[in-house]
Image (cartoon, rainbow, N blue to C red):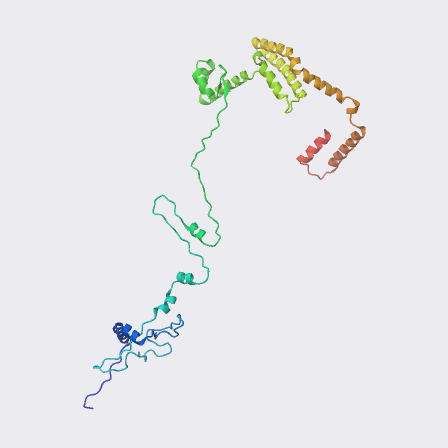
Amino acid sequence: MDGHTHRLPKPKSRGERMVELALSKIKSTSDLPTKQDEAGTSFDPFDIDPEDPFDVGSWHYGVDADDDSSDAYIPSSVPESSDSGEESEVFPIQEIDTEKLSTATKTVPEAREESDHDVCPLPKVVTSNVQNTTTETVPEARDESDHDVCPLPKVVTSNVQNTTTEKKPKRPCYYCGEEQSQLVRHLTRKHKMEDAVVAALKLPKMEQRRAFEKIRKDGILKMNNVLEREHFDTLCDSIRDLTTGENGEIKAGLKLMIGYVLKKLIKTAKGYYIQTNEMEKSVEVDRFSAVLDLNWDYIFYTAQVMCEQRRNTLRKPQAMPVEEDVSKLRAFILNEMQKLSDDELMKWDHHYFCKDAELDY
């Protein structure tokens, strides 16, 4: 010793060692392709099993997993002690084979596409840049897939408005007899000088409506008045249409009943007109009665004969029911009525009341 004490170099900290290791890696990148070509191999120092791409071990930034003491660890590329004048020897780091690790770094959709399993494709959403247009969404992608997907229901709306309106029926005018669908407008324009129309126009809205309604009903009554000689032919045609069946047979009972109803109507109308001192209308009813009597045989004679023949046929013995059937029917009716009356706990409803009424009838 020449009097000077030899001091040991101060151990480098972990951060300094990591910085030196990073600088050595940067310096070795320029010479790395040439060395790989000379060696002819692609050795990966971090690859445990070259044939297995998923065998990358767990590293802790320069600390060995098997070493318990992290302070005593010294990287192999950095010597434990070195002189200040000598350069430290740096081992070149081989390039990691990216092709082997590419399969490990692939995303899940890419790995699924290369696998043999059938994977449902993700739905595509196709939008349009044109304004006020519909976008093609998930249903198109579902149609391309192999899965059976129920189509979305379509709602079809129509912008066409319903223009059909119910037309008012035509009513006969009381003054001129013309049929009008707008009877009030017709009265106010064509017959505005009539006393009833003038009085109706002076009334309030509700009373005015009732007054025009009375005029309308009077016009219908005047049009449908059958006790006028001018409408006798129309009356005969109406009776013929009502009393003729589909096959051309005559409904004798209905036809004869209409004739007697007309006779009763003549008596009633004549008495009403005499009571109200309307002698002109009473005389008109007498004239209509004379026309009906003259045409009675022409209209109702056939129906009257058919009704009389049917009545005479029913009185013959062969048309009468058998006495045994009558006795059986009587016994059945009495038995059913006795059952209904004896059952005190029975709850009477509409069905039992109708049954009792039919038995009594």
